[in-house]
Amino acid sequence: MLQNKIGIDIVEKLELNRGHGSPYDRGGADSYYGRGKSPHYQNGVIKVSEADMTSEEIYEYLLGYEQNEEQGDHKQW
Image (tube, one colour):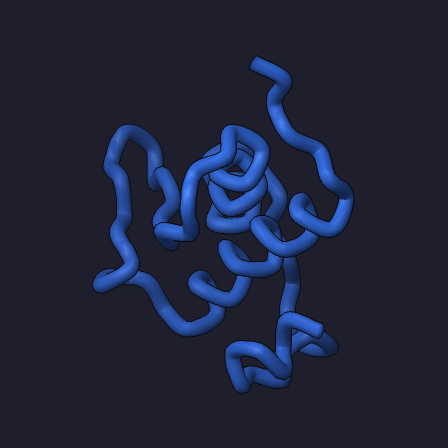
């Protein structure tokens, strides 16, 4: 389970934002397009990189990435 991989146990208290540009959305998109893990998200037109993300935002990104990997939903080129 992802929470054990990154050492954060916040699943119960996390209000997950799955909207376009959110960390969860960007993680899923990176997985879908076959890109490596690189936590980030879009805040309007500004790209927020991992260095400026909270631990919860990084967790949301990784959760989106891992859930998409588990579903096996990848772009067919």
